[in-house]
Length: 231
Image 1: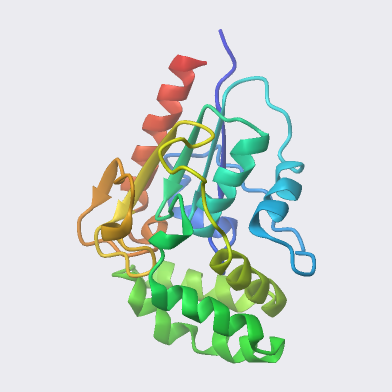
Image 2: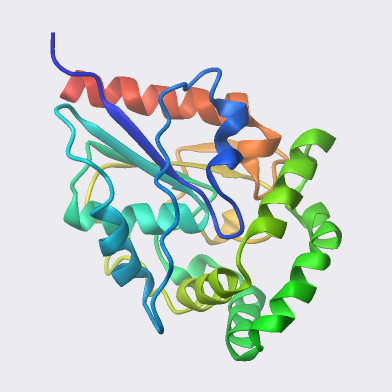
C-alpha cells in the first residue's frame, strides 16, 4: 500500500496552529510547523524558503495549504517543495486581490513603532466582528492567539504581505491548487479572485477555519483523497 499523504497547514497572520483546532476531529493529522522569527526586511518568499526547511521529507504525497497569509506562504513553499496539491483557505494567488485599504494599512503598519502593535492587539476585539459570525469560544480563541503574537512578528507580517507580488501567472501555479473562500470575505474579497475559488461558502467571512470548520475540513479531505489517488 502506498504511503498516505501528509497534510501541512499554515495559519494566517495573528494566528497559530490553534486556528485549525476545530477541524482536527475530521483531520487529526494536521501538521503545522511553528512560526520562525523573521529577519530584518525579510520578504514573504525568503521567509517561506526558511519555513520549507522545517518541513520534513515525507515518503508519500505532500498536501500543503494555508489560511490567508498561510496560503501565500504555501504557494511560495510549493516552488521549493512541490506538493501534490496546494489548498488555499481564504487566501489568494496574487497581491492585487487584496483590497486597496488592506494594502494601505499594511504600508501604515510598516512605519509604526513596535510599541504601537501592542495597542493594536488591545483593539483586536473591535476588529474580530469584521471577520464574520464566529461562535463565541472560537472568537475568544482567536483573540488569545492575537494577544500572544509578538508585536515584531505582526509588524513583519503586515509588511511582508503588503509587499508580496504573488504568482507571476495566476493561471500557472507551482502545483495544483484547490481554493475555498467565503462569499463575504472583507479582507480578501471574493469578487477580486482570479481564477475563482473551487468552493464558496455563502455568507462566510475571512476566518472560515473558525466559522465553518466542518466545511473547510471536508474540502481539505477531498484534496487529500485526490492526492492519494494521484500518488
